[in-house]
Length: 127
Image 1: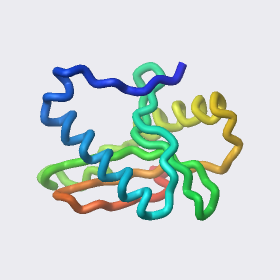
Image 2: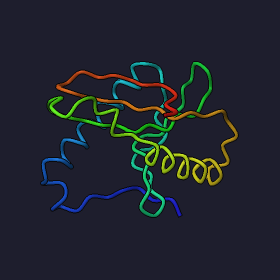
Image 3: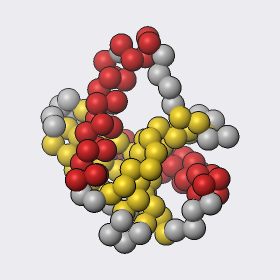
Image 4: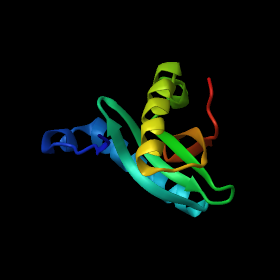
């Protein structure tokens, strides 16, 4: 069964969870300004999760998005954190989401990174 991730009070008070949540909020605002329709957030199946699910209205394509937020780029480009394993995880949840919601649309997997307030959108990741 698909679930939405709910954070406990303890998790919400931790820096990395609040940073991630604020990054996801920024990503949603960015997507909406770019003409996307946000359908869902923090969709989980078991231990696997997708941060944002949106519809690219320009081309009528379903988009599954991983958001990576960092205060600084000390450790390099955060998009590198979305590796093949994470992509497979997104593909798994995406397939279940499409089946349960009965969405017969083209789809893709994207990453949005936010570093020091700068947003970058990587479309159709397939590394």
